[in-house]
Amino acid sequence: MSEQNTLAAEVRTQFGKGFARRLRAAHQIPAVLYGHGTEPVHLALPGHETLLLVRHANPIVELTFEGTTQLALVKDVQRDPVRQVIEHVDLVVLRKGEKVTVDVPVQVEGESFAGTIATLDATTLSIEVEAISIPEHLVVNVDGLEDGAHITAGQVELPAGATLVADPETLVVAVSTPQLDTTSDAEGETEGDAAEAPEAEAGEAESAE
Image 1 (cartoon, helix red, strand yellow):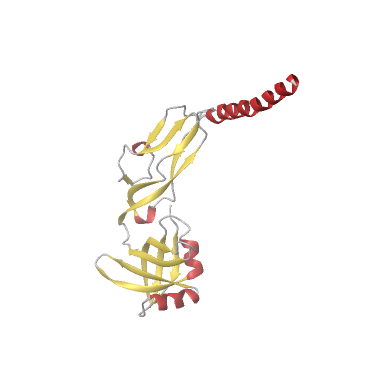
Image 2 (cartoon, one colour):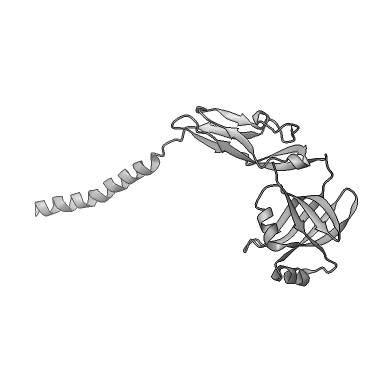
């Protein structure tokens, strides 16, 4: 379940790339809070605390600003593609008891039958769940599954009160036996035979002399 964190934010009235750079230089991150028909509120979030917060999937945060508090879900995190520095955060207003649709990471546990491998095909699944009960991840157990076994989204256990939004036939995990690649060995032997042939011919020529 997602932990609820608290961030002390500041309302900002200045915008633009130049101001955003100055914010980040001051160890703050520009953000916007919106949803439920409210006017968007532009905020500056504390850099270090926000960085720790967004390491988790679908984090929920209680924002405090100008004497008010507001529960919100981190909807999107924009990063610099090269430096991976957080450039902007989108936050969505939450109401207690409200359900939200989120993409939750899938985690594989257990070991499939000896000699097989379990391949994770869908890394996340979309579910609808109460905002304060968003799971950190969904667990798929592959313990003892044999070659050819597969698990679809409809077979994944969801937390109480959650419903699957993704197609239930979506392949999540497939178990298979790795095929040995003999092509490279055969090519290696062919190359080796070809390399030995000139040496053998040279040896026969010397004997003839």
